[in-house]
Image (cartoon, rainbow over all chains, first blue to last red; front, side, top):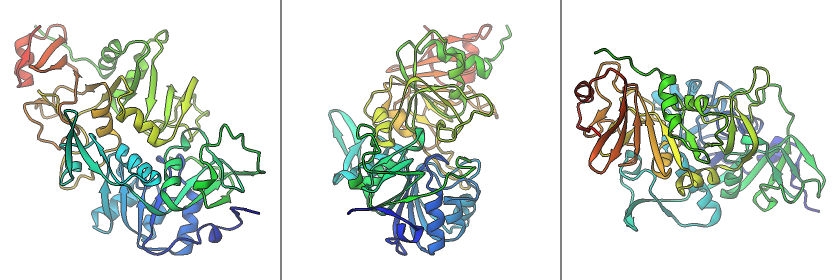
Length: 228
Length: 214
């Protein structure tokens, strides 16, 4: 019997190694897998490269991982926010490398990794600092920049419900990067608020099919689930 | 003659005039967010949010915030009946694939050829953040810019060439400021309207770039 539902964070995160590239779902606080990140902090993995949209908010979740000194580099689109003081401090002190990526390039590079695409041309970033040094090509009279896929060893995503085959549904705009990141990592771990029997998820509404998910771990819905 | 600058809400109302029924529209964070307050209720317009929402509605009443339902600025919003959620690659596919009719962005500078600078001042101590600006700028069918005409120091934000780092090349269609509405044309900037009492020569002087008078 296949059962991807594990009982502990240590089991859920068994694949993490020092130096891993780790994708974190979420847009601001929505969809941020805070419990899995806390598990990552507890396991002590270090020298990580994170792929995420932002660079942490307040003192919890991703910001706590940064504060614990476990991160070497962040690949993201929008690090600077009203409450990104942990990132800001580390970046200004030169303790954190930043690769800034236009948000659509970030999503598409992740999608490309999951879909087996070698590289792709996009007009986004052409003629800007973020396209500098990259191969360009004119296609149909328009200029494009060559962008490469973003792979990861581990993707941590926050979903709403999951079953033992790893099928997932999400809640509202907390979906954001979860489904594409799930396709792009060698090991995807989902935290869910509810596990259901096989057949308990309407197959018409499954957003991430279990083929993309290695482990599912149940977490309790926190009172401050959303603090952005 | 004397003139009064458009307030932020008047600028937003002016942009709203140019958004037709049925348009798929993305409003950037900051000033462009105000446009939503000026779209007439009877006009059906589809608001897109980069984090995976179409049919985005207004802010919820206090006490009804749902932190899984936020906009690009991470503020709580609502979903209209008929609205939909989708993942980030689909959301940016909507931008990058040319499916959005209009995006409205803020700006530091716009050049006479439609070059846009709005993501980074390039300052030594500034932490860069780009978000979805570059995707919107080149992906939407029409890119509107909404900004103050002048910097706090009185310099024109309309320039021959942007001195701040570029967001996109030749991507701006129309510019809405507190003084005027300008169309970017192959021949340069063309005035659509300007505030009452402002002499056209004074608009030209303040702008510091050529503007064609209709």
